[in-house]
Image (cartoon, rainbow, N blue to C red; front, top):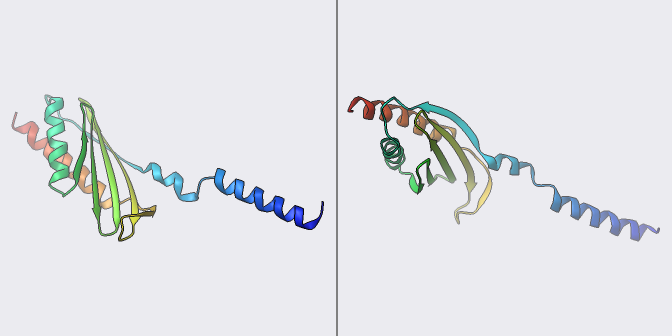
Length: 136
């Protein structure tokens, strides 16, 4: 094989690898777990869902999905686009968050999980569950 052929073969192989192997930040797209919050005894699923929605809305998150087992919210603020998933049962609320840096046009560029935002939601959920339980 001549040098030109080898060079072309190397270029094709490099391109193929670049397409098949995801970028380093792709793994971070899965987000991060922020643990769970215990649901006080005696609370119904509807009570828990209401607490989750209020916790998101009062921190300016947009609720994008509400089902019988989870509530999903989105917040775009200060160059970050974040999605938080609150999966709940009769005993706990699991908190998972994904985040991305975005440009002025809203295009995602790199993973950036807003730990403080998710921790604030976790604290709010815990407080509101306690308050709602005390009112029963």
